[in-house]
Image (cartoon, rainbow, N blue to C red; front, side, top):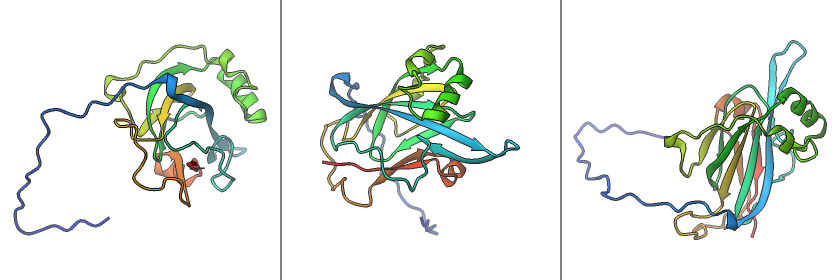
Length: 200
């Protein structure tokens, strides 16, 4: 990115519109797939953080998330770490539907470390804690949202323009594809990122 600072004054003709674009509410009837996305942190024998993974997979492992262009999905994001992770999904806009504290998190985390499968580890049994409210300024369509530690955050993700339901004006299925990741730079660098491949 490059900024060029001009020595002369520039006139800004832009104006805030009188009426902002109204986005539609999410429609659960459009959901075609439900996914479980788990965030892991790995530490050394002396409890120093080593790296972070999504779904216990490094970035260079084969793509596992292949949503169809134009579809809507539910992603249940499970933060098994002790940090907040602002999740960013390329080409996906999403809205938070629900946030629930995971009870007996150590027991659930032990199971996930062994099986890496939220359904086999009976997430429904553990996602029974306190419901967390979404702040008013976060209660809309997002492309980044902070996933809180020890919480299951259910989001509805749309892989199309939400205000028109139109597809992208480019081939979203073209190589090399896209990614979804934690938006903290140190966490991205420590592999909290996975490939995302949109398909037709």
